[in-house]
Length: 344
Length: 93
Image 1 (tube, one colour):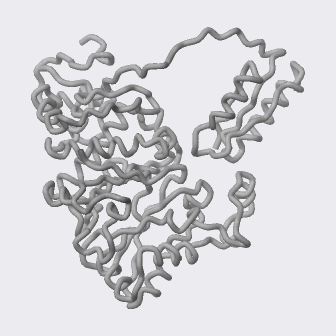
Image 2 (tube, rainbow over the protein chains, first blue to last red; image 1 turned 90 degrees about the vertical axis):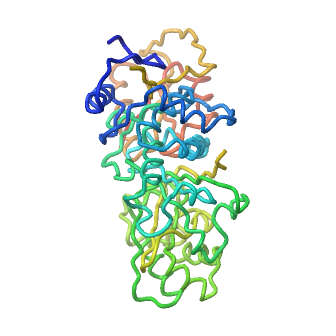
Image 3 (tube, chains in turn orange, yellow; image 1 turned 180 degrees about the vertical axis):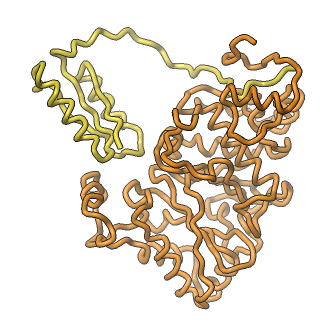
């Protein structure tokens, strides 16, 4: 077969799935899990789902090529998406292409960040995106394949090949897939996307370059104040990138914890303020060498305390998950933003 | 069987190539640009010291971007382009 790197459509011998996966691995197209074959007819079905969304895509860093919609669809097909998932995937791609997201930095870094994808709005139910029990985990085709499709786009279009352009020291299982739905139905506060200026009926994708979720286990506290004590002290980690890179984080509150906080009168804003104040890291927990590095690069402590994020508003709070006394802290890469995109 | 290439993309417009004048590494002004990672400055300092054995180093300067995780700001790139004939970047961790 001749060199296929510059061909949009490739003629290959008829082959079964196993042989296609061998080809894909040889070409560097695979994330290591089995792929579907991106045949012309399958790709056409996906392209049909975004007809009417004619906004051009900017060059995708680090590789700096402008993708065709067919190439993007090929990745979604390979990931195992249904065609109706494709507008969610393309919205997520537009999110990570926000210049403030810093796609080049997040893909090339040694930090183990992966694109977190959160879906809000009625489309969660239409596509059966899991917002409840095990929402970060396995078992839902939409969650598994939407996140995976974005990861394959970043591998194949952006060029984030592990060990080459993607220089992550240890990586992160979330690099395979990291997509979940906001649990709006059990959120006692305003849904996240509405707080970001969208209508409740809008379908919105929110992306952040984040670590895998860190569990916030609190079965004992029966008050909002007790929960925030646990959350904040678990967030106060000297090893978080945000302590010197700054940038945002997410706190995804489980519904039972959310109900307790709401019952005790906490609002999103007061939770942000309390977590910001209480999650500071005392200098005694940070090596002198690291303190010197932080200070030399402009990240000075407030007294003896290093804040975990720049401002209370950089702690993004919402609700997801099912029954149980767990929540999650998701630190970001640091030099990035939380981008929201309405699904076309 | 025909499939779509998942890596296919079009070259971005505006990538015009310009002819570069050759750099004389023995005499020209050189920027040593730190990526602001710990030890980057030490690595560049070692390079400057080694260069001092073979050439004058009074026109070899240290520069740094202000964040390891962010791209170099435009004003820094313009400063390097305006004042130096070559630049070395420290890829350090």
